[in-house]
Length: 339
Image (cartoon, rainbow, N blue to C red; front, top):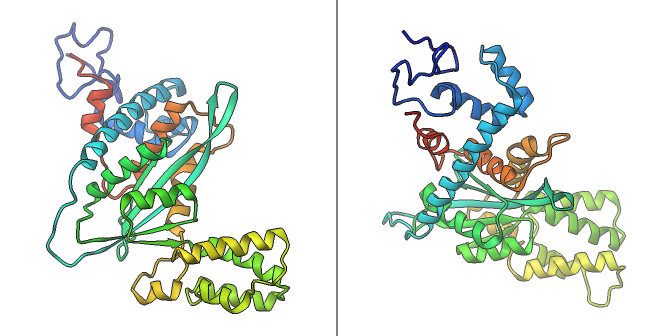
């Protein structure tokens, strides 16, 4: 008779193969499937030391080094399989529903995390995209990667198809105005590009300070902007003249706002009139903090390139409305069948 202890599938005192025990549900990870799933889940939620303490409370004693090795192997396979599936989906045409199109929001931003490089620790940018239907923001799809822009763009194309974006739908992009995001939105065919109202307010504040406005007047203008009641182009036409002298900081802020207004990214009253209510970047800021920063920017954390890539992809999968990969496929890729 084979004795299987909690969290382990190997028999007591001998290998399971010698005992003639063969279960197709087992793999070479050394733990039962249910336990392995909980291990990798906790490893994405918590630092490894904390995850070990939680597992120990449920009678699954495991060393930090063992847990980190299991998780790293699983993450590598998850990233490879997820990337493969996204690249395949990216080659497919968008589905056609022959119904009235829906509004989808795409918020994109970058977050720097510590990665060990050739000359010590470097900070590398994790690109993150959050995709959701405008009227159901709780059903969010996340994608995070350390890839270059071209590879990241291909992944996002796959994510659109995975989420169910169709030809009749309209894609609304929201960003902080970074150039790489503007290029990404152009490649994705974003219908409307909105400059996040919070970032706009930072530049507007610099202009109002340069104009010498008092706090109360600036507060009224900021409030109108954050509510989407202020069109930046109209405001600039009303308050800024070509002959007006500004210091360098104020002049740069004015030029930035003029460029964004010229591109049509700051017509907030017009956006709201068209039913585009989302003008603030709360979703992507939350993703940067909760999905990326909460796990990868913990005190003392240092990541290898592959380790960081696997963790950010897995964290995005963990928080998504519907995952790209499935656990059963991944565990047999990471830990082959224990025959």
